[in-house]
Structure formats: C-alpha cells, structure tokens
Image (cartoon, rainbow, N blue to C red; front, side, top):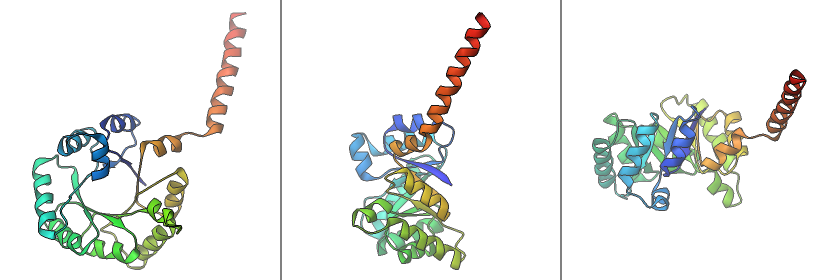
Length: 220
C-alpha cells in the first residue's frame, strides 16, 4: 500500500518524509486555509520534499474552469503534482481532458462505487472515497471501499488506484490493507499512531533495562 500524508503543513511533510516511507501527499482548500499560506507556494515546497504524487485541488465548478486551472497548475508547479477534481459531471469532463493530455488526476469526494467506476472510465489516476465522512452519517465507510475493490476486481480495473481518504484512525488503515486498497492518505496523527504499539515500547524498555544490567556487571 502507498502511504500518503493529508496535510498542507510543510513541517509535517518534512517529519514524515524523514521516516523514508512517504509515498505522496494530498492537500485540499480546507487544509490550505488552515495553513494560512499561499496555495502554490505550499504545494511547491511539499513537492520538493516528497517525490511522489502531490495532489493540488482545483476550485472551479465548471469543466472549462477546472481544465484551465489544472493546466495552469501543471505549468507552474513541479512535475510530480497531480490535479485533484471533485466527482461531478464537470469533474468527469475535466478528468477526461486532463488525463488525455497525460496529466494525473485524483478524483475526490467519492461516495459510491458507481462514482468510482465513472471516474476511472474518465481516466483518473486515483479515486478518493471518503471513509470518515460516511462514518459520520452513521453508515460504514469501509463498506464503500469493499464495494469499490470488488468492482475493480470484477471489471479488471488497472488504470486507477483506490486512494482511501478521510482516514480517522489506525483501524481504517488496517481494514484498507485487508481489502487491498492501493493507497491511503492520512493526517500526521494517524501516521504516528500506526508506528506506535505498547508492546514495542514495553519490549524496548525491557531490552534497555537488561542491557543496563549487563553494563553494570561488566564494570563490577
């Protein structure tokens, strides 16, 4: 599975990238607003830190506007930046035009397997089902990922990766792994939770305590 970081905080990208396992970064208008910085400058800095796909989202609602913004972003930002568009009829039109020009597209705000398949047919590089937002409505977000993975298998979809988004906790990641999702994007908090385990910490404490005894005995 590809591990993406969902953030617009450059310091967080630097920290997680230093682990050597960061495959890409997703951003969105809400994250950019939270950062309080210039959109293009933030994306440019992130793209220089992480060589994997960096999603930069358009804000136009019409297809022509999305296409124009997407082309402008690709012309002005590093090569590893891909364009993020919403799953609407206009978004599908823009995805088709951009992907036909060899531009990677991440179709976001996916809430059904039908939307996912249509985005794939339009040429999306990634589709992003929003797990946590479905959970918030009282439904099971992971059921959507399962439906999409079954659809991918049934129709032998190979051109589009399933990028699980709106990740809230490590169990979401574990379930995505078991279902075979290609990619997951998560906040820094979840990255850190994934690497932590109380038995790892306890084992390390035991090893260090035993080693301290060994050193003490050697000095006796």
